[in-house]
Length: 364
Image (cartoon, rainbow, N blue to C red; front, side, top):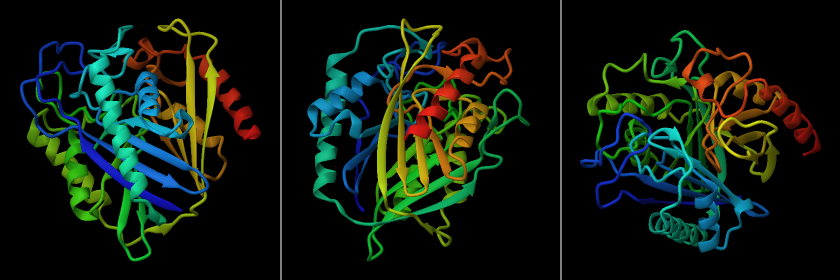
């Protein structure tokens, strides 16, 4: 296997509207930390690009533009958003000020971000080197919790993937976490990746390579019950503590370097908000490890049902991947929650989806 990673800043020079909160409709008034994008390029038989943006969400329009400006096809791209609530309101296309909405794209903003990403892909291609993939699992207990019930379901695992050359240099790193990065609430007017920016900065200094941040099953998980307040200082405190949970790399486990990326489309029978719903599901296999890309906000319970379909394999459910289509919850999730009231699919259809996915995985 070969790997390389490149990161770049896309913090706007001017004031912008920020996505994530309906109550915040004012322009930004400064920058807490820069918004970053990371391209992690992996090559086995074919090339696969894992791309992470400090955005509230990703959409197919941006992915198509990246493919158009690069020599990569859409099928080679695994594109994620960290889901910060202090980034450009332009992304994703179906979400504006934290509310599902239909709108037209801003050609200049979108094309410029796509061009920057294509440039990073080209640079990563030039820097590919043979690597050995490693992994580590840690715990984030106490840093975030179920936001409806502090004793409710939450995925507390932190997953680190490290791609290291034979002489010990790090060519790329993934940190998979499971929480809304929303220490900063709607009163905040600073551009920010939220607490994960601090985590990433500390990891970058340790590993000397770009860090690809991937969010997981966090539709109903946040720092609501664990943060002391909504300040910048608290944002950095939680980010620092998260770093300390994953920084010890004495127990890394070597992974099988075999790589495969598949896309499958699920056509929903019913959809609450959109005229039609086609879900692009991305299944990235790295040896015995599976990164399951899901195009929206997925509840912890729903993600557990998905993981069970892969038998004994280790599965990282990756939310906000290759599109943003709203909230998705399991039929057993509570019906009087915010997530249930605005979910994209009727909860009962989660059963139909799981049965379809079971058949699809058997075929794969």
